[in-house]
Image 1: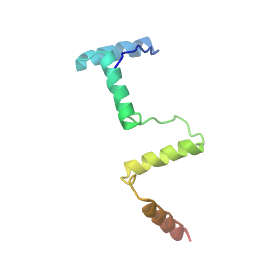
Image 2: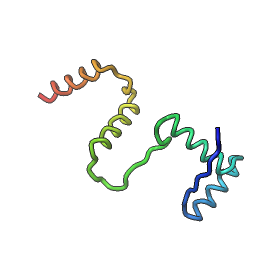
Image 3: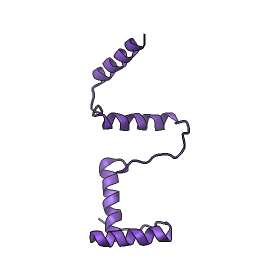
Image 4: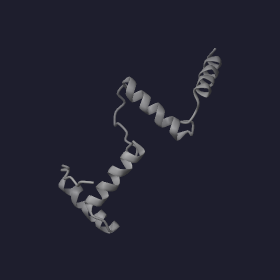
Amino acid sequence: MAQVSMTVRMDAGLKAAFDDLCAQFGMSVNTAMTIFAKAVVRERAIPFEIKATNEEPMDGLSAFYALRAEAQNNGVSEMSLEEINQEINSARAARK
């Protein structure tokens, strides 16, 4: 596969710290960035949690992603449609 170049802008101090840490790991910054990119593509997600610093209302898509992440964390991301509907009906019944 053809190789391409990518430019990333970051604070000089952060870059120096990142360079040093990568060297301690025995790898180049390019290798570290490639590992990160492969993990993102493989998992179809950023491999660490990203949180907002303020509590702004979520749009529909953001709310969906948040609920999906919560389901994966709770081990229920592989539920069938029937199981999901049962959960919804149980929650509705409990509210009445």
